[in-house]
Length: 438
Image 1 (cartoon, rainbow, N blue to C red):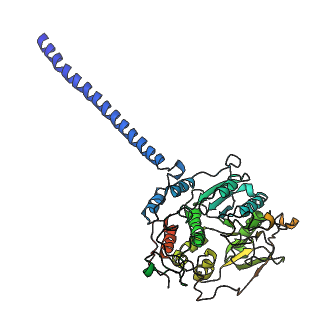
Image 2: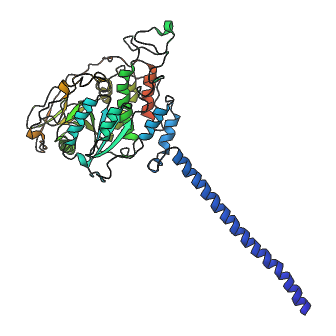
């Protein structure tokens, strides 16, 4: 009996050891699996960080994928650095941690006129309600003096974005000037140079094509690319570096936006100033509906979608001016008059004395005595729009007639294709560059 018991004990010992070993092996395997998953996770996070995709942009993988699929010009190091700067958070969040719930984002697009920019920034600093909103400054390339002025703003949240494909960023290749580009009225066949002339026989000038490129890149980036605004459905106000903004501008704009659905449901936008840049308004006790102007204009995402759907019309119209392109071909394609709502007294003034690309490098060249003297009366310091006013509509306003083909300057196929690419940057679908509108 004892021998049987001993033999049974000897039989159980190996089985117990086998079970213990199996449990130990299971623990080891689970631990190794956990460590492996942790390593993969850490590598993934490290890769995202090394690619410059910060936490705020980690949700925009589809956007990055769409951009990579486009045939955009090969970026130089400067262009890449500017694009990285566009991902930075707004400044002054410590001073203004929360934006007002009904805030209207302001976009100021600038080029290289520091004397002008100082004037508009000073005027913005006195605007009632400016601390409640976000100011986005869109630069056409990078100019140190312009950058310093913007970095000095302390009166609201500020975000800077820089056009990474600006001709000013590419010094030896498209979209800048390359050595084998055709110039002026060169014959491409005889000169063996690159480029298509516009309808008047002139080849591209980077100084003027940058106007249209910057505006279109900015619009697509603000509405569909930036984390701060791509989910914003409300109105966004657009102003330029030579627009003097009155103290009541923001409060008046809020009133116009709130009144527009009932007072002028067919109005596409709200404006701070008359379409005629020389007008200061009628001074009536009524609101005004007229064609959309280019000084202090605001519209919402619904209107942006209508504009974006006309990318082909915009990109293939032979005119380097973005505003004339809109007036002459995009707006008419909507099928009905494009009205904007404004007050009877201006809240913004175009003070430019000279053209967009004149005056750089010359001290105070574009401003008389280095100063801008714009009269601001007491009525311009507070909201002066009344909700009980009716709307006076300007019918049959002068504009570009059917058949107008543009002032030229936008005939190079490369510019049209780059423009189309900007429209596709933040979308997965394609806009056929070959389907030029009839």
